[in-house]
Every structure is written in C-alpha cells, then in structure tokens.
Image 1 (cartoon, rainbow, N blue to C red):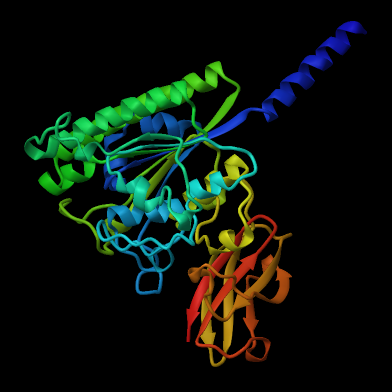
Image 2: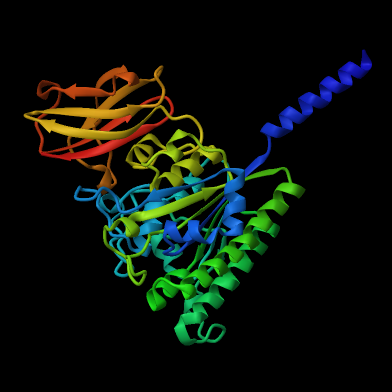
Length: 407
C-alpha cells in the first residue's frame, strides 16, 4: 500500500512539474530568404527545429490590391511580425524615414504590460530595430524598456570595418548570433528577438546562385548556436521554449531585389519547435500569425482593443474560424468565414470609424451571435449606422478575425 502511494505521489509530481515549466520564447529573422531556397538547401538547424514542431510556407505583403497590401521590404516585414498587423495599421512604409503608429502594440510592449515581470532582449545589427520599430523609451510606447540589448554594430566601423561584398555585415551576424546564444544560455530572457542581416545583402549583391546559397547555410549555422543554447536551458532548467525562425520577405525571380507583390517576393516560411494547429497547414499562414502565437504560448493577457486590431491568428492551440471575407451588397455587408470548430459561436461586432489609430477607443456595436458552421452572415443596412468605412470583428471563444470595408 505504501509503495502505491509513493508511485502515485511521483506521478502527480511529474504531472504538476510538467505544467509549471517557465515558458520562454526566441524568434529569429533571417533577412530575405525565399521559401524555395530553404527547402532546396535542406538546412540542418532549421530542419531539426521543425522536426520537433513544424515547417510551412507562409506569406507576407498583405492582400494584393486591397487596403492591406504591404511592400515586401525588410523593416516593414519586421513590423508586420512585431505588431501582427499590415502597413495600413502600423504605418512603417520602408527602411528609412520610419514613423510607426505605436498605438498598434508590438509583442514586446505586450510582454511589458503583463502583471508579471518579463525580461526581454534584442540581438541585432540595426539600432533602429529597437529605438524606432520597438520605440524603446518613447512616451507613445509606455516608455518601453528592453532589458538585454546587443545591437548597433552597423555603426561600429572600428570592430567591423568595411569589406568587399559587404562581408562585414556577415561578421556582425556572427557576433550577434554568438551573443544571442550566450545571452540565452546565461540570462535566459523571457522574450528575445534575434536578427540576422547578411543573407539579404548576399541576394542584392549576387542574386540567385552559389554565393547566396553559401551564406544561407552560414545563417543556418548561426541559428544552430542559438538552438543549442535553447536546448541547454531546457535540459538544465525547468523551462519550455518556443523557437520561431522566419524571414521578412522573399525575392524577385533573379534574386537581386524585393519589395513588390510577385509570388516569390510574397512567399515566406515559418519553422517552429512547437506543435501547431490546422491553420499552420493552410494557405493562409502568414508572418502576422507569429506574434499571436507567441502571446498564446506565453500566456500573455492582451487587452481587447489591442487584440482586435491584430490581423494574425495563433498557429498553436485551438482556433474556431479563419479566412474572413467581406462583400458589400447594395447597402448590406455579407460576411464569410471558414469554420474549424462546428460547436463554436461567432459574435459579430462593427465600428463605423477608426479612433483606435489615434489612441482612442472605438465604439463597437454587437450585431449578432451565430453558429460558426453557418460560415456567413448578412448584415442588413438597418442594423448599422450609415458610413463609408466599417471595421468588423468576428469573435469566438478561441480566436478572432477582423477586416475593414470602404464603401
């Protein structure tokens, strides 16, 4: 009898400890590597990470020809990821003269607004990633503070002097990846962003070919350092880590450029060590789904008004609906979605302006609650105030979708 109680106690202890692991996340952006290159090179580190979770193609660039269409440019891509929104919301339109709308919170601000203290880190070359895109220290971001900072090396010409083919940027990436691995191993920040730059330069300089392939392989070795540090933490500490590796955009057919809406420029990819849901396997997977997935993994509480502005949906855990579409019809608005949970109920909300972008609250009107399996709803003109602009949110227990309409 005593032996039975001992065994039961051990089982319970194991179960409880399994739920009590401290969760931490690191996401890695390697700049400008198309999905076809990742798949053709069969990269060991990315493959190993994905073997524990999943790999899939994704997209960037918003919806072609619609209000969310977004250039496939680097700083824009980072901000798509950080805010889970497209250009029409975050307002970062290029790599210079950046004027983010900080009302659309980054994943770092969400982390810092939690009741519990979360330590954050950035390992990067560009200082602007921290000071401008994240808005560290700015009133508009609630005086966001990053706890561990390793950046600005593009300005350090003493340690990283100019080299042919911009190879000093590769040297910076080597340093950044080593510092990231060291920081994760020793400091274990709760949320870390690692940015690796040189692959984009390699493409701009040489286009498709062996040179670009070689430095994509080198980026994979840099990722391997970080992955090994994560594995060390999980082995020696009571921690569970989410690792996400992605890119900010693809490239033109020649490999030299990017910024447009060609299929190769828009086609990106995501690799993660976490188990994924049905959405990850569908065509709608996007770079804007990363931040909501991190929020869910970390258990972050996201204020409703912030959450409803996120265009992405989590690719881990349960979701009920996806692929929202709208069709103005006379003075009505027909809504469409895909049902992933036949038992779910969809709450439909509408707002007739966009005060949120100015830092104010929108007046949301609840229209109806309908079964998710219905997969459509016709909002009649008499249900809503007349307006030339509408914001619509579909909310279920496990996720939300949103869309704008201009009439």
